Amino acid sequence: MYKLTLMQTSTVHAVISLPLHSRMAYDNNNTVSYMPPLTEETTATSNPSSPLPFDLVVEILCRLPVKSLLQLRCVCKSWNSLISDSKFAKKHLRCSPKDFTRHHIILDHTLNQKSLISHLKSLIFHLKFDESVIMAYPLQSVFNAAVAATITLLEYPLNTQNLVDFIVGSCNGCILCLDIDQSSPLLWNPSTRRFKKLPSLENPLLEEEDCHYYTTYGFGYDHSTDRYKVVAVFCYECDDDEEDDDFYYKTQVKVHTLGTDSWRSIQEFPSGVAVFDTGKFVSGTLNWLADDSTNLNPVIVSFDLGKESYHEIFPPVTRELVLGLGVLRDCLCIISDPPDRFADIWLMKEYGNKDSWTKLFSMKMMEEVELLYPNLLHISEDGEVLLVQLREKLVLYNSRDATFKTPPIQDFDSFMDSAVYVESLISPCSL
Image 1 (cartoon, rainbow, N blue to C red):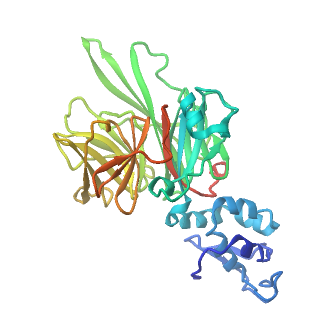
Image 2 (cartoon, rainbow, N blue to C red):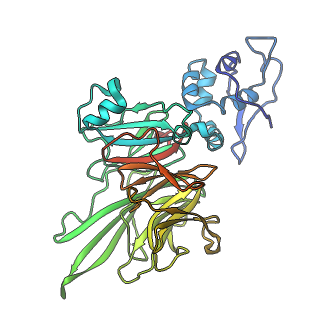
């Protein structure tokens, strides 16, 4: 195993491309190896004074950012073949979570005049007011004022006026988006600009009268089968024929496995209905906060993507309002609302183990900060939490001095959707 630092792109360019042919192989851990053994001929470079074996070249390349790798595909055929290989993409992905510079936040805004003038200026002069625009920022620029908040204007793959209705979430660098009618999911890698339109999902409730409904989605990866899945939960309330002023809850759940061309119906939710929020992906499961009118205590419904079965997870608090569900440090977390001016953030350090719930800290509630239905996005090493309130405003909470502030990238008076993603070469088209 080579231990090396990231080399400059100019140095990488000096490394000769070597024919792949049958030399590239992977073991069960997707570790790259090359057969037959390297020889002087196969390790020769365009610069004879600094020969590098090809496996070392691979170790260097997998530590480069996606943008550089996309450019380096033009160096030679073998590099193009290597960088385009799905197993190299997985190796590169394993390095990405360790590198904070490869984490980004994506924001979907509806523009207004103030947004245009104060933030983007001439960058989006060709867009009209009240249209949507999608941008990405380095996540480190949110927490570190010394890092420039470089804007990347992303072109949504489908040239539609309204762009996306909302962003479901990200997994391994791919983001699941939905159009305005919530029936046409799209899997998109903003780092590579590759996308895949998934089969349309017909809503079985459209023809029913006197039925109020909504659909919530989840997107995640099943490690046991190496497959990605999308789960759609139709939640609706129907009038009780015997009681004019009463109603009852129902759910219908469908699953789409990437690589297939259809949706499958599975059993409905075991408890209540999903709160109108996306499923949170943790440890091979999707998790929704469920609301049940017969039970005052909240419950988390967990869906195992491999077994396609449900189980319930009870929060560590009872008789308290659970404001939101999220993922921090790859762990399931909640924000609860005790009967005082504080909101508690709890982390489930070992997924599925109820005894592993740990309170990280309490946030002092400020009058100007509304924490109803917050979306927890990220927590820094020193305890700063980035969250979104009411899909309208980014808020950064510092647990050390109990203060709130607006991140430097935030200067919008508009509807906003958001997600944090990590750079990757994973191609939606190959899933």
